[in-house]
Image (cartoon, rainbow over all chains, first blue to last red; front, side, top):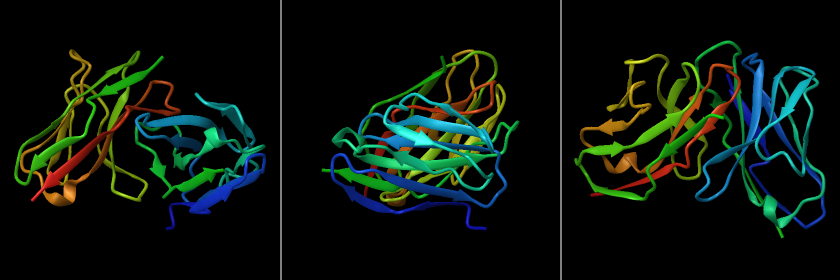
Length: 113
Length: 112
């Protein structure tokens, strides 16, 4: 199994550009989420989804959009990139109704100049 | 809301030293508790977990015990190795069962 696959691994954007970070999982997990990791701040939840067609905001949703048209995919869209969005982004997935932890992708390092 | 507090790093130890990384939490009900490890340049990997009070999670020589009375889940290892150098995150998954709440992470550096 591939687990959680994120693309691209690295990206440089100019301020104002838009882009989509891709996330796909092949474990038939209902729950998927996006986190950003900034130095000294741990991981903060951006958006999450509890199933296809259902999404909700996390702690830091501003400037990001998500959709969940299939169980497997959960793309994260940056509408108009800003330097404050320079970060490492992680996608994670899990079964529902379980006390287990999430499986994480390897991350996307985004720099906005 | 739920929150996790863990000791700030970096923690610098010599090889074979004893490790403790403190973690305390605030949550309603009975959350599940986790330790994740992040090696340089990689994503997060689940290190161990505990799902109810007094459970002890263990893996790769690391241990942590779910202490509901003190709302703590401290990570310990009896003898660290250079290969244990990484960032360690304490996290919880609340009764709602949806999301993980993370602590700020603790960087561990082990010197030969």
